Image (cartoon, rainbow, N blue to C red; front, top):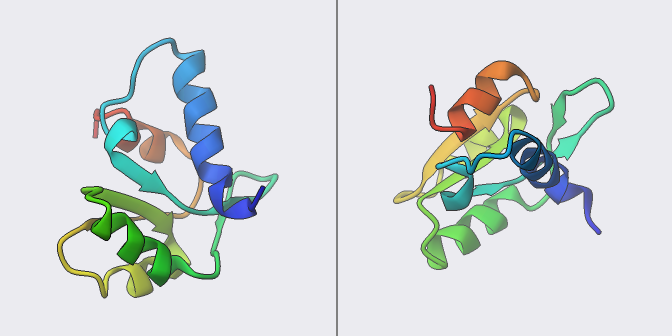
Length: 97
């Protein structure tokens, strides 16, 4: 499995642990490598992944902050930068921020 989906796996586990569905998690593509200290590292191929997400009809994508400029080149899909797996990021995914 690619490290590109580390953040998606972490978010799914956190959502399941809380035993509640996260509104935005179901509608968002998550890209990023998760470091052991909680930081989200950039990934290769972010632009291609965002283009594919848009083509498949996804309304939003969360990418590492270092990939946000690249992801922002794609019109018609909301791009959100994530620096780490912190409460702010989790609240956004849970639809509470």
